[in-house]
Image 1: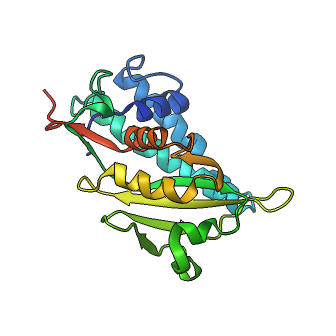
Image 2: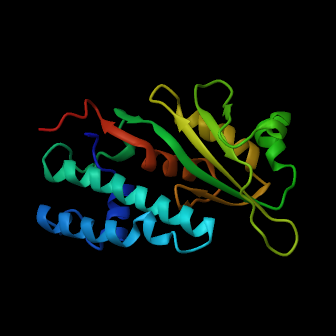
Length: 218
């Protein structure tokens, strides 16, 4: 079970889905609310809808709730803790990593994919990886996701994976250099983020923080 501290982003998601903060619930209330959410959002309940988008959204929400519940169970069992405000992602000892962080870039620029991935994007299929130059970080692009509006408008949805040895500043620099002036909106892990290096860096770090220092729990 993951023993890294519970981040501010996770705390916000817990309040969103469970209706209360960690501190406002006890272990028994958490178990009851988790049971109710599992019943409400279980993917089997959405099989009656002949709509793959609805099914996909239901599955994603169910998986997100299950992830949060696992983190909450560890918290109530005393195996993890909440990141203190004074620690946060500004700590020089903070570590960052994430597997498949969802990033959505909304654009009216038909050439933005080229600026992101070069000519390689023409052959990228869903599940293929694009390695960010100068790092071990990688991008999986979902080329089938397209928005619709009057005129041309596309949502480029991709998934960022990086480890503790990858500098988040370098990842942000790569992304910012390619989307500035070409994208109308940026969404990182469900959060609308200003297309500006520091705002992008903070959003990624908030989502990807693993631990402060050794991460050991007293």
